[in-house]
Structure formats: structure tokens, C-alpha cells
Amino acid sequence: MSDEYKKCIEACYLCAAACDNCAASCLEEENLEMMRHCIRMDMQCASICRLAASFMTLKSEFAKELCQLCAEICQACADECGQHQHDHCQACARACRHCAEQCRQMAA
Image (cartoon, rainbow, N blue to C red; front, side):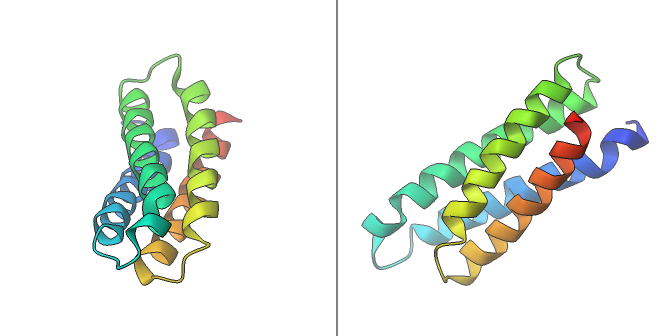
């Protein structure tokens, strides 16, 4: 794996794990209806992060475009999770913001 991709790939995998944790934790919250959009965003974000990491690992010619889309979805997920005060949502928002930043740099 090239060094140019390494930090972004790591950020993507950490973000995917944070999103998975957030989604699973949201399912245990009392007001499930309020968490519905958060869970949906977590699932989408985790999926695109893993895909982006895979494309970078494969040195795909589409990696930069995918990273740009990943950054947008990570930002949207961070915005959603950031609205909730649960620790898992706040941790997820931080991971998403970091990943969005790394993906934007990769796509530049």
C-alpha cells in the first residue's frame, strides 16, 4: 500500500468501525424513532468508507472520485451524529469529520 493512501485508508476503516458502533448503539437507545436517520447515515457511511479504502488499496483509477463522494457522505453523517448527545454519536461524528478531511485531501 502506498504511503499516499495509507492515512486515508486508516481513517476510512476507523470511521467505518465508529459508524458500525454508533448504529449498533443507536439501536439500544430508548427513542429509536429519533435515531432512525442516524442509523441510516451510519450504515451508508460505513459502507462507502470500506469501499473507498478498498479502491485505494487496489490503486484504482476511480479512487479519487470515490474519496470525494466518501468525504461528502462522511460530512453528512458527522452532521447527523453531531446533533445527538450520546457518546457514541459524538465519537462517530469526530471519526467522520477526520475521514472527510483525509478523503478531501486524497481527492484533491
